[in-house]
Image 1: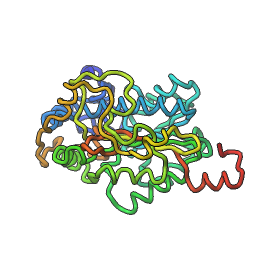
Image 2 (image 1 turned 180 degrees about the vertical axis):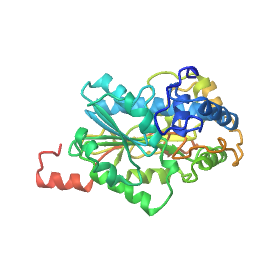
Image 3 (image 1 turned 60 degrees about the horizontal axis):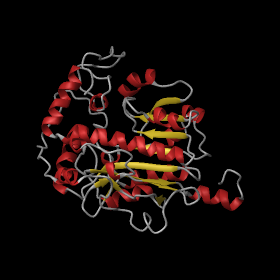
Image 4 (image 1 turned 60 degrees about the vertical axis):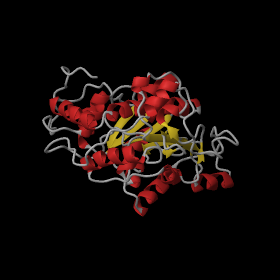
Length: 360
């Protein structure tokens, strides 16, 4: 993992002796923004759940492929909600490989993320804001967002490792509906989450560990996760485990996590890439991509039990999520997978009906 001798000087107001979930996630991804207390916490997490670092890295692989796919669709501006710390293969870095003029707004509700993360970004091309997915209006109306993002143009929205920390309430559904309604035609929404379909026992154990750190959240089925996309069009290959979503390189068997987190994207009919008769009719699909027989056996093996009392230690900063999950839907065999969709909101339909030139 990351070099343990390169921890940065703590910014003002940050307590390096108190473990922080964003810095723990950074450690799992090989970043350098973490301290001895964070590294000690990671060892307790791994002892309780060896899947944690594997899931963190699978989420990052999924994010890299999602961003590449969105830029291939012509999207050049992104909104990363619940972004965590900038580490390796961030959205702005991946997108710039495909389109140099890409602009990215990162949003997180953890002040520690802002303190550590802002100095790591590219001025004029990316910005990190304090905000919460449970208050979409304050995020979408933020003046710093509007300085970089044009909400009348296609926007790629990514929500990774966040949904399972949100309650299953009408208010949560309302916030996601508000987000979808603000997206212009040609936009894309990608999210992932812990789901229970493939391995109910393993998913419940992992969820209890997360809930013990944050005190909130909801373990959902793939069907419940699909509802966050509303009426957006599901793109191929549908809602699948993270490493089954458009794989572009082999993953060693030792790096494959169990199918506890799924992901997907959805897009508008006008500019999406849905394959007729495939993803739209089969939104939740079994694993099918690139895994060897031995890898499949590794993924299907039993999930170690974790006590619900496991904690990261006294005084742990449970401001948000541990950031160790990713996925957005469930397949018939219960595996988690990534998905995306593009936007076709009521506002977009109004623009097309009125002949608005912003409509594709």
